Image (tube, rainbow, N blue to C red):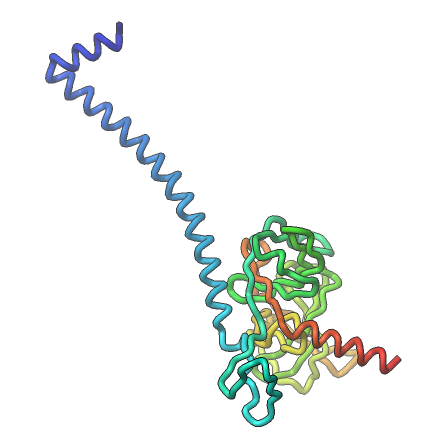
Length: 266
């Protein structure tokens, strides 16, 4: 009866019709505003996923991810068409989403998932969306992969000074997240605070030139002729959401060659 009475008043009174119309417009506007916010949120999620996929495509087009065959000496196989301009892929980037991440223990791991994870392999290098070093895959189980981050007491990666080229080992002392150590750099190296450290390329896990961090401090060690260097990691491990696994076509041949060399030595 109340609803019917309101209908009659609104129908036969121009004043009440205007008041009711204004009220309904405000109510409808409020509902639409809230709906638009929800819709905008899901659009951002879709946009973010699209950007990650776009980055993957761009990384796969990086010139550094390809080998140019030697124009002087080359092995030609009858079943393959090879010439001096053919490019061989060295690395392929595969995106994945972070579902778990730790930074506060001595053995920090990152868990990732996604359609590409089925292609991940143990010892595959992992980088962030800014092509900065994150860690190395230690295990793959179905749609999930476990990554040993650089913030792990057993993490050891080959790093290189961008300016001068000296190569050392990057590790973590287990103290401050995002602060790494570069060792085995001789005192003869010309080092400055702010210098960039990159991957050396001496491992099949990472291409040469992946950003690892910037030097924050260095001092001579008393027990040897090397510097003790600290650097801030390029990756912010507190906010890692998406990563890329780097598939190296050279990984298996390099590993096999090393294993054969060990067998010969033994």
